[in-house]
Each structure stands twice: as C-alpha cells, then as structure tokens.
Amino acid sequence: ELIAISCFWHSLVGIDENNSPTTPVLTWADTRAAGTALDLRKRLDERATHNRTGCRFHPCYWPAKLAWLRTEQPQIFRSTSRWLSFSEYLTLRLFEETQMSISMASGTGFLDLRKCEWDQELLHGLEIPSSTLSEIATKSVLRSRLSDEFAARWPQLSGAFLCPAIADGAASNIGSGCTTRNKLALMIGTSGAARVLFEGDPPAQIPSELWCYRADATRIVIGGALSDGGGLYQWFRDLLLPNESFQVIEELLQTVAPDSHGLTMLPFWNGERSTGWSLQARGALHGLRPGTTPIEILRATMEAIAYRLALIVKALEPFSEMTAIIASGNALQSSRVWSQIIADVIGRPISVSDAREASTRGAALLALEGVGKIPTIDEVNNEVDETFTPDAARHARYQAGLERQQKLYHQVMK
Image (cartoon, rainbow, N blue to C red):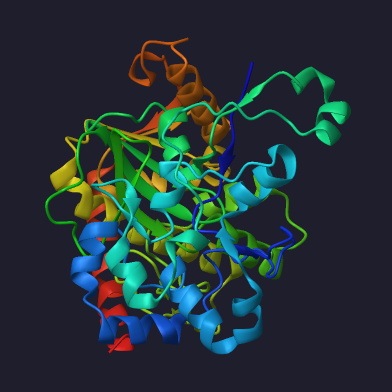
C-alpha cells in the first residue's frame, strides 16, 4: 500500500530544533517580500538564476521570502533551524519524515533544475546554509510509515509506505492526461495556470515570461501562473450578486456579448506572476460608467483572466505542438460560459477534463508508475466532458480586448 500526496507549490514554514513551527504557513499569495525581490533583482543576476532554477526573483518564492524574514523578522529567522514547505511539515507530523520531492523542491526557487540539487550559488549569495533545507528524495517511494500515534488512528494505513509529495501543478497535468508536448494543461481554480509537461531536460534558455519546474527526476513542467482566477470571480460574485444562484448567473453572462461592456481589467488583486512578474501590480478596472451592471463586471473579470492565460499559452508555443488543450479546475468544470470564453480568446478548441480531482489523481498515477503498477503515466486513458470550439468573429473581438488590456498594462506598470 502507498500513500500519495498532492500539495500546493511554493509554501514556506519554519521549524525550530524541537520541530515546532516558528512561522505560519507562508503561501505564494503572501506578497510582503516584493521590495526584497526588487533588491534581489538589483544585486544578483536574475536572468542566470532564472535559467538555473526556473524561478524569477518574486515574493512567491523562497529566496525573497527568506531574505525578507531575515531583515523584517530577525528573531524568528534566527530561531528557525529548518525551512520546509507545507508538504514536509505535514509528513513530519504524520511520518516523522521531511525528505522533499524534486517536484516540491523545484517550486522553491532554490533547486538547480539540471543537477536536481540545491543551487549552491544562490544559497551562497543569500547566506542560506543548505543544512537548513530538506534532503531531496531520490526515490519515488520512501520506507517511512505512519507514526504510532497516527497508525493507531488510521489502522488501515498503518502498513502503507509514503511517496514524497508531488506539487499540485505537476500532478494536475498528470491527472488530466497532459504528460507529453502535444497536450497543454489549462487550469482555473482559485488561481490559474497553463502548463506543458514532458520528459527531457529544461530548455537551454527559459523565457522570462515563464517558470520551469520538475514533475520528477526525468520530467519537466514549464508554464505560467496567475495569482487570480476563480477566487477573483467569486469575490466579485459575492460582492455584486450575492443573492443570485450560479445557474442564473450563467444565464445572465450569456446575454452579454463578447467585450461589449466597455471595461478593461487588470486582474492582479493578488499581484502578478506570469507573464510580466511585476512586483507592484495591483488590480484595476477601467471604463466604469453609470450604466455598468454587475453582470458586465463579472463577464469582464472572466475575459480579463482569459486574456492573461492567452499570453501564457502564446509564450508556451515553442515548447508544445499543442494539438490539444485540456482544461481542469472547478471554475472551468463548473462554467460552460467561461470555457467558451477561453476557447474564443485563445482561438483553439478547449476540452474540459472529466477528472474532478486532477491533482489527487495525478499523485496516485505517479506513485503507481514509481512502483511498476502501471507502465507509464502516458498510457493512462483520460476522458473529457465537452470540447468548446472557438468562433472566429468572437476571437477577433477578443483580440481587440486583449490589445486594450495590454495597452493599459504598460501605461499603469511604467
């Protein structure tokens, strides 16, 4: 028996010598280290670091967070003996184990993608001892079992071995069947992302718009992420249409023609990651007038997020044949309107995966491959619920909307 775990990327938690937490769990959405990230961009070679680690200097990653903690919370920094992601903190509690998978390590900003080791140049530059980071797991299955306390609580799992946690983004690609260059995974949950996963080495030069991580020792995942997706949609829905059912809202959204509302939105309520990686980005809504309706604002939100995903998809074209785009995430699997918007904005068919928990499924499949229960994750069948075909006229209309958004972006982000 195996225990496979999918866990969110980029989290950070400190522990002391007694394994007690010294910090809360800091997630990618914590942008307090933005000023520190700017300082790192000024004093270190970001381009070279990005090409080694796959990560820009940005507050979502560990280098900026740790440098910020050292300056702003020195007592906490000094009292911390080890830095973990939430997945290692979880397995420390359940299994007394803190080995970190290559997948999770690649999302910290400290992993040398080609060597699959901690990047000594960056650690030296930031004066972070490698001994404060977890050991990187070299095996797909550890011999660790649940501690006595939790084995007694869950006796059916007492004999199961632990698989090092895989990051949710990589697991989502696997769970939705996007494990080769010809399939691009597109996801909108609370946030959003577009990713390509394939066997092989990282690109010789990683584009500035994108990140590059690892799914495991032999597979690369390259893509871009948005900090705002379904969470921003839900915020506007709760704020503007709190008493309407989801079905009624879907019907109202269909009455609004593409880009007919006169609104231009920069969907950066939680800051920006791909494609511009701005450290000062904030949300903006331009074009409001007395007659603007709540449903128009909600439609503009969905279109604005689709525009940002389209920019990521375009940046990924050199790395994918893109014969299929598979969508997942509760926001897309719930909304036919949003799925159609994205197909029309990108100008390519979008097939919505029927896997309701793609990340969980992906973690299980990778674990099964690791112990030889399936030949390869590439051979597992994956079904789709529905395919949305783009309309040429709507695509042209949305191209004008995307250009308008980019113009506002460059005006605001000067």
